[in-house]
Image (tube, rainbow, N blue to C red; front, side, top):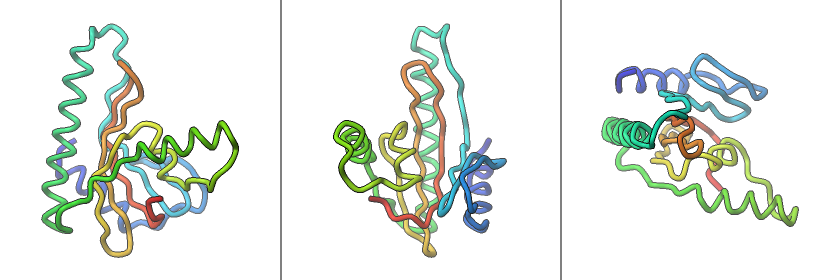
Length: 151
């Protein structure tokens, strides 16, 4: 998909109502208060020596940065928002069972996306990032449209 296709998917989801229950859509998945668009996916690379995975990761980061330039023309410079603290919080909750729950989409995103480029526009949060599903596993360029405030 091109940057124009990615922007079109983001715009489509911004205009669409959020689903009442979690589930899949033609662009990815969503739930109450959010949509996650899986803009590009590169599946597992088991026979790779690491080179193709690294090249794909760099390509997806470049695509995220290109989208950031285009979206910044609409909404200004994004906030670079780390999701690592959310992941640490989730892991601590698993161990001790304490703490306030982290809402989706932020909880799910924190499991694979280290950081997002984040804007606030028209009552929604819009974010783009690169999901890393483990060494030599799938990579995804994702966009998030949500009314759920980041924790």
